[in-house]
Length: 126
Image 1: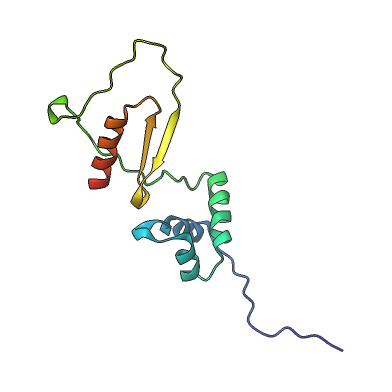
Image 2: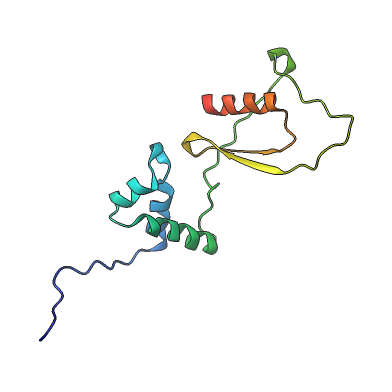
């Protein structure tokens, strides 16, 4: 008995430029990984694998499209300014907060909560 495979071959070759274009579409206009994968007829896991591969090659960075907004927070605006503690200062850690629309905030863990709230509101409003 002889077996036969019917149907078109689904294996496709993707250039790094094509992979990069697809990977960067995630998050644009609120598009999810699932939506982008369906649009390009690939599996979600393929996008994650491409991200990893492109990151190793140095072709993609999640912060590549980062926008920096100038922000001037004055005490006249009613925003409290963080005062250094006279007591023992805890060690600081770098924190990354990912916001809607692919925006990220990088800040120190010792940032005053009121100042951080003002920053988040300013970035969200931009």
